[in-house]
Every structure is written in C-alpha cells, then in structure tokens.
Image 1 (cartoon, rainbow, N blue to C red):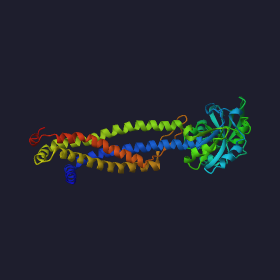
Image 2 (spheres, rainbow, N blue to C red):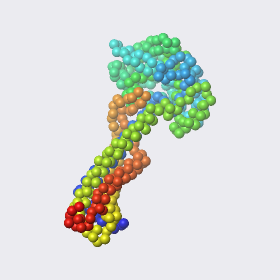
Image 3 (cartoon, one colour):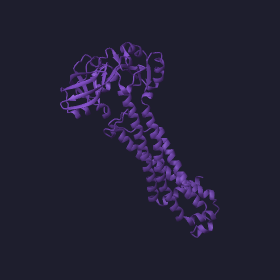
Image 4 (cartoon, rainbow, N blue to C red):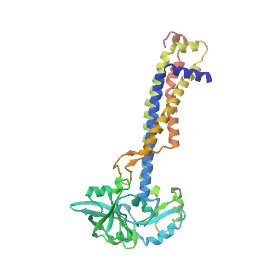
Amino acid sequence: MHSIIKIAYRNLGRNRRRSFFSALALALGLALLLLMAAFLRGEINSALDYTIRLKSGHLQIRAPSYDETKTSLKWDDLIQDPQSLIAQVAALPQVKDATPRLYATAILVSQNKSIGVQVFGIDPQATANQPYRDGIVSGQFLTPDDREGLLLGQPLAQKLGLQTGNRVNLSVNTANGDVNEQVFIVRGIFSTGTNAFDNATILLPLAKAQAITQSDNHASVIFILLKDSRYTDQVANALANLPYKILTWQTMNDMIIQTEDMANAYMMIFYLIVLAITASVIVNTLIMAVFERMREIGILAAIGWRAREILLLFLAETALLTIIGIGLGLIIGLMIITYFSNHGFYIGNMGISGYLIGNMIYTELTFSDTLKLSLITLLITLIAGLYPAILAARLEPVNALHGSQ
C-alpha cells in the first residue's frame, strides 16, 4: 500500500499545474461551504442572542390569560404587585436579573407625522435593561421618577426627524380600553443594532407607563435573565408552583429554532450540490489521466498488477488530491471567516416578525461544522473518484498497450 501511495504522489506531480488547479477548485468549494456554515450559525446565534436580551429573556412569568399578540392591559391579564414576585425569583442563585415590564400599543405623533409603536415600560435601574443603556447614541437614559421623558429607537427618530429635546405626542391604549394622550420630551435616542426592534419601540419608566395606561401596580411580564442558559429548565421547575405561566426562551423563540432546523436541511442540499460540482473537476482530471496513461496501465497489468491494485492506485490519487484540496480549503476558509468574524457582514434592515436580526452578522465556525464538512467533502470526492478508478481497472492489458479501450 505504501508503494501505491508513492506512485500516486509521483503521478500527480507529472502535471503539477493541472493537479494544483483541481485541488484549488475543491478548496474553493470547501471554503465557500465553511463560510456559508459560519454565516448561518452566526446569524442564528445572533438572532437568539438579540431576542433573548431584548424581548424574551431566558424566562418570562405571565398571567395565564395574557395574550402577547393582543398586548392586553386588562388587570386580569397582568401580574399584580410584580415587585413581591421579583423578590422571590431573584433569590434563586441561577438568576442574574428579574425585572417587570409593561407592554402597550401607542401612536407617536410629531408635527404632521404619526406612526404606530410599542411602548416598553421598564425599570431604568435593572441590569436586564443594560442593552438600552449602552445603546444611547444621543441624550441621556431614563430615570425611575421621570414623568415627561421617553427614549426612541434611532431609526424611528430618523424617520420622524426627531432629536433629543424635541416634544412628541403619545397616545396610549389604557387598561379600560380608552386612549390616554400626553406630550413627552425625547430624553434620548438609542440603538440596539437591530432595526426591526429600534424602528418601532418607545421606552418609558415603568411607573410612568403604569400611570399613563392606568394599569396601576401591574406588569405584563416578569423578564428573567439567567447566569447561564443551561439553568433554564432548573429555574422553570423551581418556579412551577407559582400561579402564573412560566415560559422558557426555547418556547418563546420556537420560530427561530425551527428556522435553524429548516435552514440546516436546505443548506445540506446546497452543500451536496457545490461538492458535486467541485468533485467533478477532480473526476475529469483523473479521467484525462486514465486516457493519457493507458499504455502505462497496460504495462502494470502485464507485469502482474491486479485490477484491484490499479483501482487502489487511482483512488489513492483521488484521496491525495482531496486531502490537498481540503487542507488548502481550510486555510482559505478560515482566513475569510476570521476576517468576517471580526468585521462582520452588513445586512441592514432585514427584520422579520418575532425574529430580531442585527444589522451586522458575524461569522461563527464550530469544530463540529468544520469536521462535518471536511468529511463530507472527502467522502463525496472519493465516491466520485470511483468512476475513473473502475475505468482504469477494467482496461484489458492488450488494448491498453495499444492505446485503446
């Protein structure tokens, strides 16, 4: 077997340019697949991270009758006296932060422009609201006792031509079904890096949100962040005795998880197509080698080489070309992925309902993805290389010596 590999290596060196470009074609195909896998994983992980930090948390506590799609403000659908419940939740060692949030729908009016928005009533001092605090691009963050200030997402402010200090009119639905209206001052403008969220979100201090919606000491949800997502089920079980609904991030982000599964299935088809195309380059190279070396194959058969050994020779050439191509592809792919993991892809506003995507996607390549794609590349190319190997093994010695099939 060692001699076969030596001969295979020598044969590839006969036409180094052709062998190099064949391996390069496979390398570029593998590099493309690695980049696609890293982009997909980065996009999914980014969407989950943004959604957990900004909207869902790792866990939420809700009233059993609360309907998120209707943003209900009826007292029966809300959590009464959320602070007493938060004290119980925060006592769990796995919990990083637990904070009340009140959600309401509203219409924001500035001069002759109006737009529908969602109001987030938040506790400005809560750790869970750090993404909004860090995202301030102008002005200042809210204070708990502010009764006239609000925060706008940057795309929303740009759409309405608003700046810090401007006055706007906010009409908010109330708990009894009426509409409450008040003039607010734009205290600050924030950006979380997700246009879908920033384009439709108003932040108010929780106390002011409760007052303007007439929801008194109630909250829509208790938003919970954990020290590690692995604690999700453990904490959910610890809270199971509460007279409320406990939702995990997996349940709330089911669409993202399903999208990931579906995307992986479609990407596997894409991987196979790309690899089939690149593997065909190596197959064509080896078929050309078979026809160029017919007399040599005939001589090998005449001096006692069996068909199996000739088959192994061409498979060894296929394997060597594939290994060189995979090695080169890993180098090229990792260089490109490293660049985009640091600088990212700018994709702009590509928000989908219930699915927060950042304006920048940073590639993330895992060892399992790298190993999986490398093994698939090796397997498909070896399978494709069977045809020229069998073609060479089946040549009749006499015909091969005369240069005919």
